[in-house]
Image 1 (tube, rainbow, N blue to C red):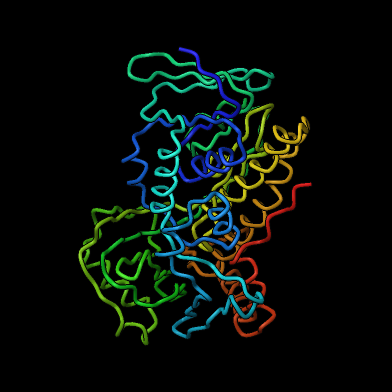
Image 2: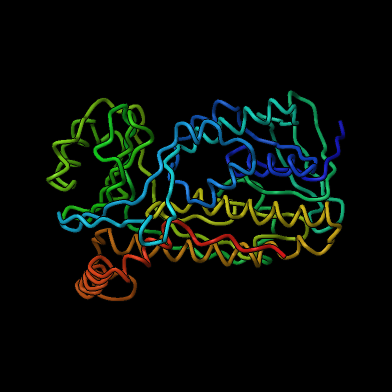
Length: 402
């Protein structure tokens, strides 16, 4: 079977769904192809801190009602530095910008429901997805659905299918450059239906390693511990997790800590990764298909959103303003913001984690620790330093598309 559309979107995560919704509102036909089921997509436990730009983009897409009702606006966050707490007042330091706590699963659910209500075409549980002729004016997507081979003829393909998806691998190795930094630790994360220890996030640097107290709602909490890459989830009972968390949280917050059974537990390795360029011909890489950041600083989902913003604007110029060259600018524009986010996430990770190595970033560990201590002392104890953290945490402005 052959079908035709203007934009084929590979992947039904939040970036693919958001792009599809924005294009639909602009009158641009699109089809989404996803290799797993909707329930599997919704089962992924991911980030929940949204930059102001992302929040505005969700509102532009018209899927903001539940987010505005149930999301929690955060005016700031805390960094606990060896037990001493410093508040980064985002609202004050950035002259009014904030972030919102609203889970990625909930955004995905809202976007799925909006797409279904609009009757837009989505193919879930698609097998053997392949991209063809991406450097031509007539790219195609082929896949098998319920035993039938389907071919999508399109003008453009948006690869929103993540780090392990088919989109980036379609670009020949000699036509892409990949930058990667693997960190020597992971994050052990626990999701639990207990009230959060604080109304805002607490990033903790301690002698025992990094910890993060986060939240998904007023009744659901997300906590993380820095652990060695050799650790296995099965080695961490709920009791062991809560005991270690108590040793890393600032003492004055422990009275507010409620523990309970975990509803999800996992260990995520940390990496910094960028693929350049983020396009080949009429194929565009979006979000994790092109870049990965360590979760320190909450930039992963937000960088995907800025990719969506850029691609949506350029495709609108192409189809609605007949600017045939507009899509050629995607990689150049998107990468400028991607590298800002990559650098900030790398910097936050270096600042707040313990590197249990004899050599870190090309220097001996003792020297590295002194450098990081000196730098963090400056950024936390001077308003100018806090402004730098706050400005990057709420997100750099989206670039105007002229």
